[in-house]
Length: 139
Image (tube, rainbow, N blue to C red; front, top):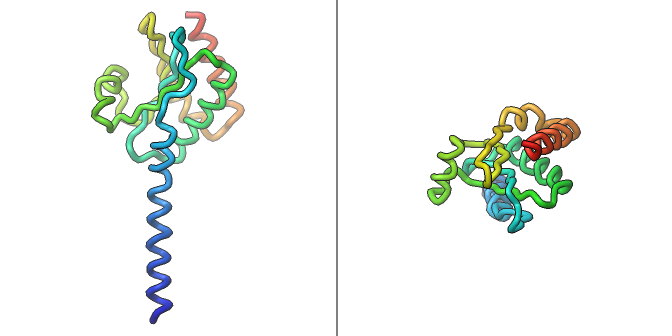
């Protein structure tokens, strides 16, 4: 009988850790990275409170791609947080979405479909995102 209680407790704790770990990780990475005062172009990833594996993969691949673009900023924006409501509305983002945004000109490029289509292929994602960024920078 003690083994059954131990197994139940162990199982419950394991499930709790599995459910809480992604939330803690998301909170730890929610800060903007690579801010520069002269940066005009920003890569913005919107997400909801509960993030899926694909959303996390899009973030990781985007961050990796942006290592080649030190002047660009990356923002991770939780659409469920009331303080982000206006920004989410401006981009019509209600969940996971990826955008290029030029704060000086106001131009936006929605890369959400691209991101979901290529999230499982690291090389295609990075190569494609670089092409999109390069084209956007020339606009």
